[in-house]
Image 1 (cartoon, rainbow, N blue to C red):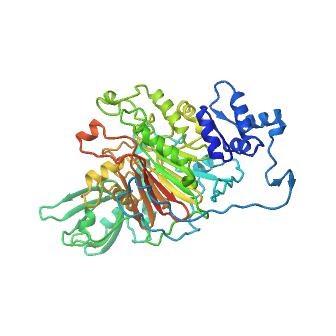
Image 2 (cartoon, rainbow, N blue to C red):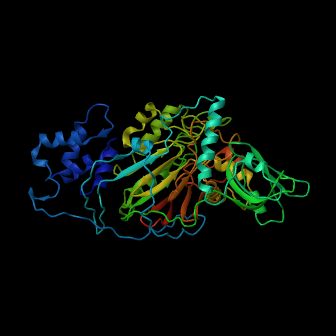
Length: 548
């Protein structure tokens, strides 16, 4: 087999059961005889090795100098002093005819280089620039820029958890939530504490920021919304004939909002004229990559289930090896790599692999089918072997070792991942169940899961309601707030495909790789199986490919 491209080298290594780092692949590709170099690397690989490393390939080349490649940037071993660059074609990949999403792909927004993801300690701890890879010649007219790539991650709870479940932990997390979200609202209202409003005379104008403590309707059909800040609770009345009454139906307990209005004659209640959410500013403009590069967004693989669609996965992996997918350099997986064990009643009857560690071993094997030069970022979900309470830390060292063959970046749920200057908020999405259950169908539904994602962006929190369907862990800070507006919001969990733009944020729920289970059938969930949304990071255009 000719090995003139790194893609073919990666596939040949995978056929032998190995992965490789990108520098190793490049060294093989630049050898005088790539086939012989690859065969020697495989034959002399250490026992039990899963990855071919650059050091190992160099040792093979040193043992046979006739296969040594020319140094990067030289011709025939002579440095010609010319800096070489590659260009890429623009445009959006078309659907392959196997299916499409639930709506037309959203239109791109202009770039905004000023958007920043910050420089937190979590980001620094998780930031790592990959080893530079030499520019790769592709067969045909297309080429790919293989310049060094960096991925930064922030908001990762892994190794940062301090919660013990004590009362003070709950106080700390809600206080932190209030302080952080109220900052987003203080420019819109002149906030006064609840205790200060209680001292004001009747008919005074008043404005307040608080967490929603209670929402109830009166006998006349009006709404009482109790808001709580760090000083106390104050009741607010929203009249049913007000335009803002529709927004009351969107409220969830514990989310942060602001109100303005007039106190009653006895100053015992605030008649609300305006209601504000933290929201994404309409002035927001997303950042985009400065070159044509793509990311594939997937979730809910569920290896270990009898309903895992292995053929569709292999078709997807095969497509990633084609020239058509040449610009797909990132794969972002939003949780539920495996089916898990004991997640729901009688789950064992639907398992193809019973042992949880064997499930991850199998997932690692499927991961090997992905080209070795694709950057992979993964977060856990509610079926994975991590704590259920959010924020979820990343996989432990034992599971990381099992999944080490592809050198994927593994971070907590949620995390904000910045690639090519584009920030992607990755959240598995368990809270979407709660949003869909609590809100009217026109506001959020399983058929259009991105509408529920819009609500989370509007509330600037991925899991606003505490103590409901979603388990939340009290920490000294609230890792679930959306402090910085992402360019892309990526979720999974509900096994439905949906996407769209909300105030220029691209929201994508990426479907699943598991056909309908008996449980899903019992609750009338018809999953969208085998889809891979592909995002152009330079335009934030989206295309959807189907592999079933």
